[in-house]
Amino acid sequence: MLLLGACAGWSLITAAAHDGRPEGVLLAVLAVAAGHAVGRVSGALLPVAAPSAGAVAGLTLAVALPALSTGPRYAVPLGHAGGTAALLALATGAACCAAWATSVPELRLVLRLLAVGIVLAGAVLGSAAGCVSSAAVLLCSLTAGSVSRRGACLLGLAVAAALVAGTAWALAADVLPGGLARVLEGRLSAHRVALWQDALHLAGRNRGLGVGPGRFGELGGSAPQTLSADGKPHSALLQLAAEQGVVGALLCVAAYCWVLHALWRSPRATPVALTAGAALTALAVFATVSNAFSFTAVTVGAGLLAGWATARPWARDGAEPRP
Image: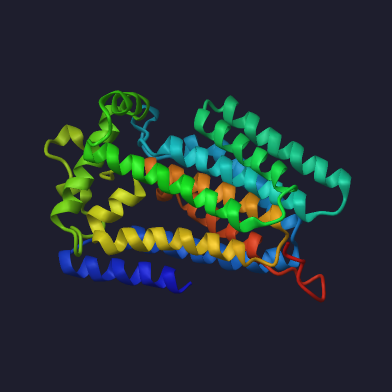
């Protein structure tokens, strides 16, 4: 919670320095904090029912999100696909966490079938990223049952997230080999890469305090056509680096590392912690390459899942043994 407070405080400092608009950052921080608090309480009282309900809610929102997005269908922001995929990954993680939390074999099977249904929903919705990420979370959850020590697995998740972030940064800096850069640009679109390059350019010129929260749309494009419809670079890490400087980007990285540390120290069983870690790492990947954090449902869901996976169930006198 101290890190979330630091994120909010730093956004206010950078906003005051450059007449920025920190409301978006503050809303995201509030959503994560509120979700985490609700997740801790509901996970302690209802360790199976709460994440089960969350999985159903996440799936429902992922299906309903296209109708809720602003603007006509052809003007949907670049990050919309990332938001849908992130919701599906979080919903799969919640269903799998609930499956590991129950001791009733029949209920565990039903919850895993729900997770399979979420994976298939990604395919039906046309979200290839959501389908693949949900399937990856499900597979990680199934294999987590044979893991005795969670530390190495959580470290592996951190390395995977770091590789994605480093690749995105290198692509924006145009330091990747030509062949690999062309492949990635083809998958991500030249428009999105141009936004990242604008963000990195601003970050390089304003390393200290950035240009101010919410000001990328005003300063980020060398030409109007390089700007996205919502004035964001569609990468949380690069946006924070551009708008809040190096400190803002480091606070974002520190928040993710804190979540992994909390999962490592969690009193919940190892499969629950690793499942949540896999889903939250998928979210970190989507946030690095899309605008996933711009959706309140995603930030609330991230806080909820982290809370459920770190809650200490009150139904027992002691904590669950942590292998």
